[in-house]
Image (cartoon, rainbow, N blue to C red; front, side, top):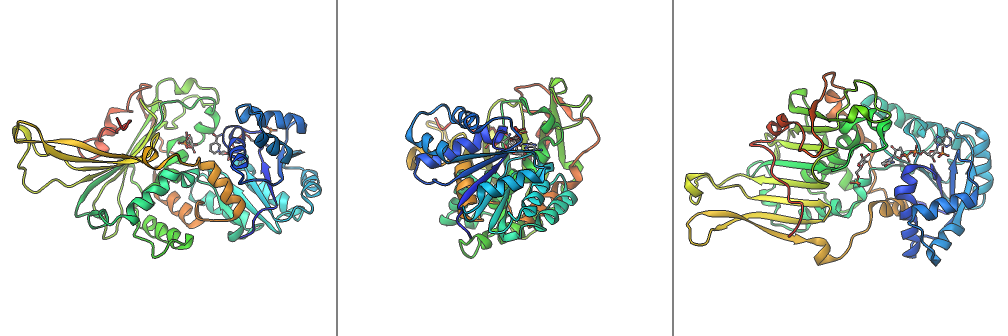
Length: 455
Ligand SMILES: NC(=O)C1=CN([C@@H]2O[C@H](COP(=O)(O)OP(=O)(O)OC[C@H]3O[C@@H](n4cnc5c(N)ncnc54)[C@H](OP(=O)(O)O)[C@@H]3O)[C@@H](O)[C@H]2O)C=CC1
Ligand SMILES: O=C1O[C@H](COP(=O)(O)O)[C@@H](O)[C@H](O)[C@H]1O
């Protein structure tokens, strides 16, 4: 697929580079997995020393051989992406370095501009283009963007980042499902009553007001990250581990997901959001969403897949709870109450693992009470790699499996399209709460409490 001779990092002075990409490049260098020229391209008035200092601060101020190696590999081409001169200078800098990986950590409106500039300088030959999210803002604009990028880079040389696909706990879902045989016989509508996916964040939109206000929760995390999780959880077993087989199965299941109906959505906006710099007066952008999706296939027909996510919630957690159907006869309910259902919890963040909520006899009584049976993967198996390290390593090596294929992106936009830009004002909720009260009606009998810790 073309191992890179150099990484060209557009947006090297931006927020994502500072928070994620430069630290990931540092860790890859420290692990001995990265040693190649990294050419930063940005409008910046920094010089190369200034960029190295920026990178050092981004990496937490290290003063070691790994950072010196990374800093020694850094180059800078300063200039505007709308200026062909920038790409001419980039060509001079990149000349003779072999296959190029262009990583676009730039505002999405500039994805096509940069691709065109690269092509204008002949830098789309022997090269791969990696674009950050969001990929479009609805189904049509994603198609337009894709068509624009395909003018300059063919599909084999195009990568669309969804950093959730780089998370080890997300891959754990696939391994847990398909390496263990205990789940498969019950992993269908006959045994599963509902699946609940919660991505909660205890912080608000911080200094990303303008970005967030143009997007909202559905575009920011549901269309991409959370529908990718749904696809991994709901898909049929792929016939092999090759990237294409996995992507094909994910596409098949997304094709079967019904477009979401406005009646199956509750949107919220936390108190104080409208005072955030960059947020439009009277904005109807949601900072919280709870929704219900249905999959029209034999495995999942009639099972609600409930997804909720929001900013300024009580905790930062990513957890999936599959609720099993109750036994047909209640034998051990306390005071005649029905047995609580078995739950399978896939826990992705902050700690990765799995918990089965089983029922056991309450000592001294003849009724059952739920007991958690857990495995903390990090404790048992050791630490996991950071998502952006894997994304960058794959961008450089060319492995496509941790990127979003366009047909999946397109299906995801189709699924959320009817609930983008709903005109009504989202329901207010207090910061630190679990969102607006009517959101509890989205899940059958309300949302299960999420686990938060393994203790
Ligand atoms: N920030 C985040 O937490 C996340 C961001 N993303 C995605 O990553 C991408 C980048 O986001 P982010 O880092 O926040 O954006 P920023 O606005 O912080 O950074 C943009 C970068 O692009 C450069 N740039 C912008 N316009 C031009 C231009 N016309 N010519 C030359 N350089 C230009 C800037 O250079 P200079 O600084 O010199 O102006 C800067 O390096 C986006 O697609 C975003 O959606 C994805 C997930 C999370
Ligand atoms: O893409 C995004 O993801 C982050 C959450 O990612 P994580 O890896 O930190 O869990 C989210 O906060 C942000 O709004 C969104 O743009």
